[in-house]
Image 1 (cartoon, one colour):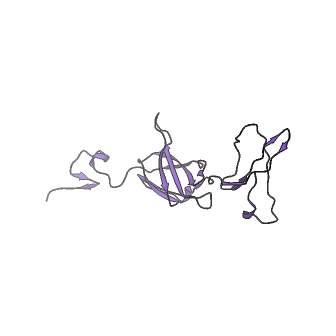
Image 2 (cartoon, rainbow, N blue to C red):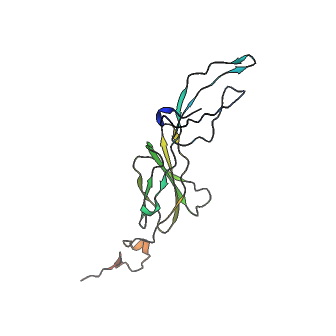
Image 3 (tube, helix red, strand yellow):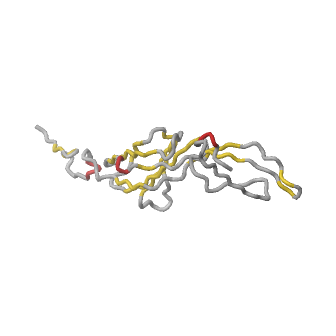
Length: 180
């Protein structure tokens, strides 16, 4: 297995790994994300080795994106999450999130197929959320990004009688109404 020479400088070192297996398959592990590899096989027995097969080229899944917490904007019930791709050109992103202290059985919520490096998400007020990202391309899905803790603010300044718990029906949205 090696990285193809076309992507490298002619004087660059090409790494080659040899793996001997007794099965007709092999799992390659610890490959770098967003890299292109070539693989070929040879059969061996007590009389010797065969000629190598044709090289097969494949690329690994993209690198995990990074959430830019300092660029995220948060309101009382929404957050705009922004991130930086870890790879050159992922086709899309998947945003996953959950409450910091989620009830038993409440899993991750997710948005898939995101094309731009930002998304506005509707949330509950005054709650802490963990956000994670994955990049997706033809070759697979990246590892999950590091978690970003995002906290929504308190209540809206435009709350009504039900959300604010006002008892006086003449007061709505912080404005006092009276007949003239």
